[in-house]
Image (cartoon, rainbow, N blue to C red; front, side, top):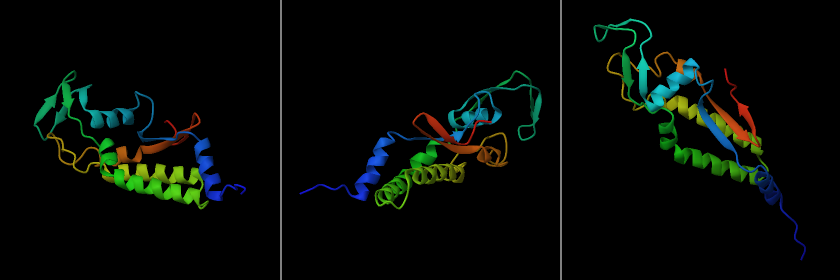
Length: 166
């Protein structure tokens, strides 16, 4: 009996040649870019030094330059993955089946996963996050500025594709 590889096996072997694929979702830029700082302070919390005197109407006080404000963490990125593990897993499983059947390429699958990660992150942003005490609303989502900067990068074979650094 002569062994003849099926098209499914050939397609799955192509995936193995790619080795590992990494997806990065978040706000990209240099470490000192304004949006990267805002994204990080919301995700991890930290301290912010007031640069110039600023009146805060809700508190009825003026914060003086040099004042240190402690920001609590308001997980907006990691919570998305925790809440959507099952959805992401189903997409990956479905894509693997389609790749094996030759109905989808690896690159098409990567793009679908990347766009899904980015979309889910934007959709979840601010959900269940403790609002700040000193102002009304939700700073992560009120202006939509942070949402506009969320993107995904696909990294394999040492090359990165997706949102470019600004």
